[in-house]
Image (cartoon, rainbow, N blue to C red; front, side):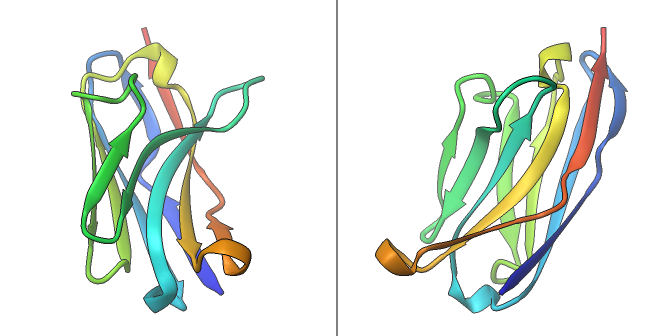
Length: 119
Protein backbone atom coordinates (compact mmCIF):
# COMPACT_ATOMS: atom_id res chain seq x y z
CA UNK A 1 0.00 0.00 0.00
CA UNK A 2 1.21 3.51 -0.86
CA UNK A 3 -0.28 6.62 0.71
CA UNK A 4 -0.05 9.88 -1.23
CA UNK A 5 -0.80 13.37 0.08
CA UNK A 6 -0.72 16.37 -2.25
CA UNK A 7 -0.33 20.01 -1.31
CA UNK A 8 0.57 23.32 -2.88
CA UNK A 9 -2.52 24.09 -4.91
CA UNK A 10 -4.24 27.45 -4.81
CA UNK A 11 -5.49 30.44 -6.73
CA UNK A 12 -3.03 32.20 -9.00
CA UNK A 13 -3.22 34.72 -11.80
CA UNK A 14 -2.35 33.79 -15.36
CA UNK A 15 1.39 33.93 -15.83
CA UNK A 16 2.05 32.99 -12.24
CA UNK A 17 3.71 29.93 -10.74
CA UNK A 18 2.89 27.18 -8.29
CA UNK A 19 4.80 24.24 -6.91
CA UNK A 20 2.85 21.11 -6.08
CA UNK A 21 4.17 18.54 -3.65
CA UNK A 22 3.21 14.93 -3.09
CA UNK A 23 4.46 13.11 -0.03
CA UNK A 24 4.47 9.33 -0.23
CA UNK A 25 4.53 6.77 2.55
CA UNK A 26 4.04 3.05 2.93
CA UNK A 27 5.57 0.59 0.47
CA UNK A 28 7.42 3.25 -1.50
CA UNK A 29 10.27 0.85 -2.23
CA UNK A 30 7.88 -0.87 -4.66
CA UNK A 31 7.16 2.33 -6.61
CA UNK A 32 8.61 2.34 -10.14
CA UNK A 33 6.77 5.31 -11.60
CA UNK A 34 5.03 8.43 -10.34
CA UNK A 35 3.07 11.13 -12.04
CA UNK A 36 0.81 14.14 -11.89
CA UNK A 37 -2.65 14.09 -13.43
CA UNK A 38 -5.19 16.87 -13.85
CA UNK A 39 -8.96 16.73 -13.95
CA UNK A 40 -10.75 19.83 -15.16
CA UNK A 41 -14.47 20.30 -14.50
CA UNK A 42 -16.50 18.08 -16.78
CA UNK A 43 -13.43 16.45 -18.28
CA UNK A 44 -11.57 13.19 -17.85
CA UNK A 45 -8.46 12.94 -15.77
CA UNK A 46 -5.39 13.40 -17.95
CA UNK A 47 -1.67 12.94 -17.59
CA UNK A 48 0.34 16.11 -17.00
CA UNK A 49 3.78 14.65 -16.33
CA UNK A 50 5.37 11.43 -15.16
CA UNK A 51 8.74 10.17 -14.02
CA UNK A 52 9.94 6.59 -13.82
CA UNK A 53 12.94 4.61 -12.64
CA UNK A 54 16.09 6.00 -14.18
CA UNK A 55 14.69 9.51 -14.05
CA UNK A 56 12.97 9.34 -17.41
CA UNK A 57 10.26 11.97 -17.71
CA UNK A 58 7.22 12.39 -19.91
CA UNK A 59 5.10 15.51 -20.35
CA UNK A 60 1.78 16.32 -21.92
CA UNK A 61 2.23 18.69 -24.85
CA UNK A 62 0.43 21.40 -22.88
CA UNK A 63 2.99 21.10 -20.08
CA UNK A 64 6.20 21.01 -22.10
CA UNK A 65 8.42 24.01 -21.51
CA UNK A 66 6.34 25.27 -18.58
CA UNK A 67 6.17 22.42 -16.05
CA UNK A 68 8.93 20.39 -14.46
CA UNK A 69 8.42 17.13 -12.60
CA UNK A 70 10.96 15.93 -10.08
CA UNK A 71 11.21 13.52 -7.19
CA UNK A 72 13.35 13.24 -4.14
CA UNK A 73 14.33 11.05 -1.27
CA UNK A 74 13.76 7.66 -2.93
CA UNK A 75 10.19 8.37 -4.03
CA UNK A 76 9.15 9.86 -0.71
CA UNK A 77 8.41 13.17 -2.46
CA UNK A 78 7.20 14.16 -5.90
CA UNK A 79 7.04 17.73 -7.14
CA UNK A 80 5.54 19.64 -10.02
CA UNK A 81 6.93 23.08 -10.71
CA UNK A 82 4.41 24.99 -12.82
CA UNK A 83 5.35 28.25 -14.48
CA UNK A 84 3.55 30.62 -16.83
CA UNK A 85 0.22 29.18 -15.74
CA UNK A 86 -2.80 29.56 -17.98
CA UNK A 87 -6.53 29.44 -17.19
CA UNK A 88 -6.72 26.09 -19.00
CA UNK A 89 -4.37 24.64 -16.36
CA UNK A 90 -7.21 24.91 -13.86
CA UNK A 91 -8.30 21.65 -12.30
CA UNK A 92 -7.71 19.20 -9.52
CA UNK A 93 -4.18 17.82 -9.62
CA UNK A 94 -3.66 14.26 -8.48
CA UNK A 95 -0.48 12.43 -7.62
CA UNK A 96 -0.22 8.83 -8.78
CA UNK A 97 2.22 6.06 -7.91
CA UNK A 98 2.57 2.75 -9.72
CA UNK A 99 4.01 -0.41 -8.24
CA UNK A 100 4.71 -3.71 -9.92
CA UNK A 101 4.11 -4.61 -13.54
CA UNK A 102 1.88 -6.83 -15.61
CA UNK A 103 -0.75 -8.62 -13.56
CA UNK A 104 0.85 -7.33 -10.35
CA UNK A 105 0.62 -3.68 -11.34
CA UNK A 106 -1.16 -1.42 -8.86
CA UNK A 107 -2.10 2.26 -9.05
CA UNK A 108 -2.33 4.49 -6.00
CA UNK A 109 -3.83 7.96 -5.98
CA UNK A 110 -3.78 10.94 -3.67
CA UNK A 111 -6.85 12.97 -2.77
CA UNK A 112 -5.96 15.83 -5.11
CA UNK A 113 -5.19 19.51 -4.75
CA UNK A 114 -7.13 22.29 -6.49
CA UNK A 115 -5.33 24.66 -8.85
CA UNK A 116 -7.27 27.65 -10.13
CA UNK A 117 -5.74 30.05 -12.64
CA UNK A 118 -7.59 33.30 -13.18
CA UNK A 119 -7.34 35.29 -16.39
